[in-house]
Amino acid sequence: MPRLKLTIEYDGTRYVGWQVQPNGTSIQARLVRALEELLGEQVAVEAAGRTDAGVHATGQVVCFNTPRTLPLKAYWMGLNGLLPEDIAVVRAEEVPAEFDPRRWSHGKRYRYRVSNKPTRSPLRRFTHWEVFAPLQVEAMQRAAAHLVGRHDFSAFRASNCQATHALREVRRVDVQGTSRDEVSFTVEGTAFLKHMVRNLVGTLVEVGKGRRPEAWVAEVLASRDRKRAGPTAPPQGLVMEEVFYGDGPPPRTPGGTADEEGEE
Image (spheres, one colour):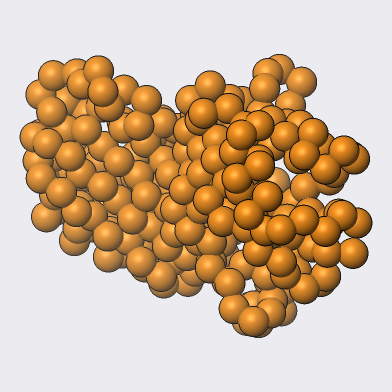
């Protein structure tokens, strides 16, 4: 039975998040509806990660099995004719039967965008966090260096995060942009806790505003106390950009188990 891997791009503004929920329309529900219309059968899909309401993606990865054999272009041309304008399939490929989009992931890259104009921006309101106070970009760059490495990120997890442990490896935190225009935060790691990227950004913005010194970020990380960190940045600035894969599942971490994925 063929196993298909789809790379999905979406604007999460109108949705309750990736996962099917009883309180509104999800991206998963719209994709399943389109797949079932295309294939004429029920389809179960698995995703690389769950994005929250309002969060966007350019590289969400979804897999499913189907007994039907169609040309690969049917899965992007055909599905895109059935999907709403704010969801699109950008790539389709056949993968081994054992491929698991979450467990085979070697890491993810997220980007968070901040509009730092002194006044609100109507064109950025669904894609950026609007911060009106001028941000010190270089200070945030230096503070971000404290977050790179394998650490206990308990101070940056949501209170209802269900992961059994908070050890995660962050490979990269880049802060780029210009004060009084646009600033972006690129975060890459093996796996993430619930709201982890948004909490990291909210903490770095406190430094950017001059409210906290750069070394405070290291103190928050070491404290493992969520109450010590900055606020959770709003969802609309966050984009799941890419999921990384190798030739098989990633190696086990030093603790003996693979890093668990939360949700963003």
